[in-house]
Image (cartoon, rainbow, N blue to C red; front, side, top):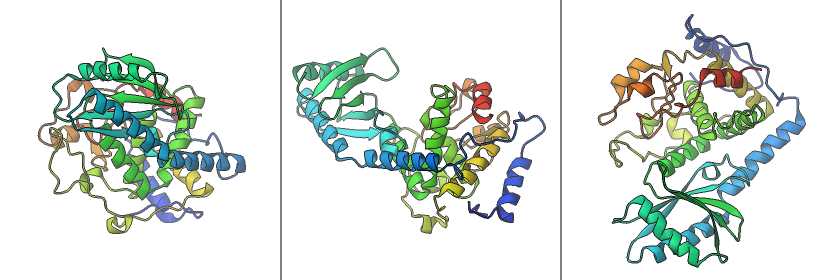
Length: 348
């Protein structure tokens, strides 16, 4: 059953929402009904601000300067690694369409058949960058003794901060999938912008990062039958990064039988009201937030359903909130979130 956010709160919407709320068991945390921080339907100024944010984010997403920066990075990598095929993949909030002019541009440097470790690649690249100082780049910082070696730069022409990552990961593929989901259902981007602003206003933006809002919005829209499960988009595809599948079948909303929601003040207000109600009454002890499966799934069911090659560690399984990654299916994206953070975010 599809939920259509419309001006009329029809019986289908309320019956479906009641079904969601009834899934809550007696041991769930109880939250008061939400009063939206900004009444999007009544506040013309806030609605205009939200539209401007999303429009600006989309302009950044397709800005030609991203290609120019990629070109400049590739030139550095070619000099640092001659006779090697180099590729640069962008990811992060700018690419997904939920960033702003102050957002970093995250890049993954892919060196063909590297003979150096990621840290050695970083140092080799830094040596070349020093030669180009005051021309194209300014080195801001380097992070070597971290899980992911990173060079933090400023692209002098555009003034954009650029983070180059030297550890191969699934972030570019993950963000490509997220972008596809929000292209299917554009209202998701508006929701993420609102939620990110709310986290900032409550000083919770460090605990509740943009990618958490993104995955939680996707899961909510899946439960509402407005987005497909990631699993359904990967039918007949095989793992291409260890046990993980990073590709997906790019199907249209028509092929998927999904109704695209009109975006206007009323539909966004309705969607956010239902989003907050949903997560206020979510049984975090029992259920998993799983955009991969896109259905109601308990923690114990998740352990039994994980594809071959994935093992969910007990330390992740026992966290207060379990938010499954959409690529690395045994990763918990909410491992640093406390229920107190979530309660404060969802309550006013």
